[in-house]
Image 1 (cartoon, rainbow, N blue to C red):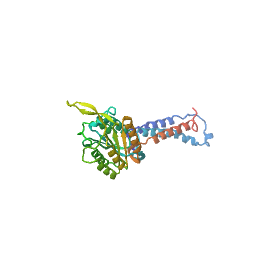
Image 2 (image 1 turned 180 degrees about the vertical axis):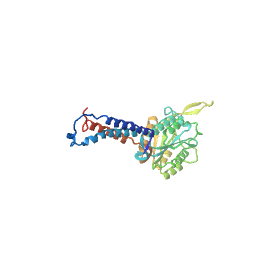
Image 3 (image 1 turned 90 degrees about the vertical axis):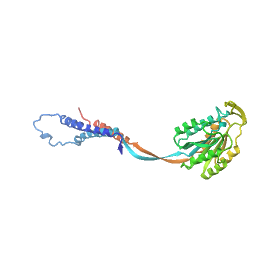
Image 4 (image 1 turned 180 degrees about the horizontal axis):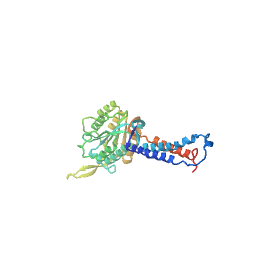
Length: 328
């Protein structure tokens, strides 16, 4: 046990004037009477109450001592406790190609994906989460972490001009797998958010999926895009961005294959509401019960002394006004 505020122990010096005051008060509190003889009182001895009455003062000192210890804040050091929680290692692989600016989602595909991803991150308090972005190549935005503020800060700043344009789905998965190798959870998964088909990169989606299968990593693939036509951004002759209607093309066959081969699942999100529903379903699927040991450097341990102080004071009051009650 250690004391957080040991300077309060100096208050024990108050015992010196209290004890001196009690002794002086006790000496001067006896009434006197003049008698011709005390022979009649020789056979009358002192009762146990005469000695016990000093116990009231000792109980008061004990109560004060316990209160001083409470003020000094006794603490237990190096304590461990185990709690049961749901946790897993997850990497969110987000497509940031130019096509993610298509306006079949509100305000566009990328912003819609960022919002639901941020909401998902906020709801996974016990998970170790990483963030990978990919387009013509892939990079690690945030390595595996439990720091929600770092994840949310980065995801809010994600844009389509971070990386050379293209859709390297295989590279996005490969980078995500490299991040998951750092994790220690039994359950590991990748949430792949893309709106196109693989058209560049070193690794193919099939190759990356085979590695994920060997590592025991599930891939939840989400194809983002409405059915039919959508407004896609295109630069005009002056370099300005204009939106033109083009058919939505998502390589669903490849996304279904990599999801099913790894034990995951493929989802098609056609609007904002469906995208939110998809993340709710993934949230329900990816939960693993685990015991987590938490280490606490210090733990307050003053309640025992507080209860003792209350007990001593209550006992003093009880004795003072019952068994040891004095007549003024």
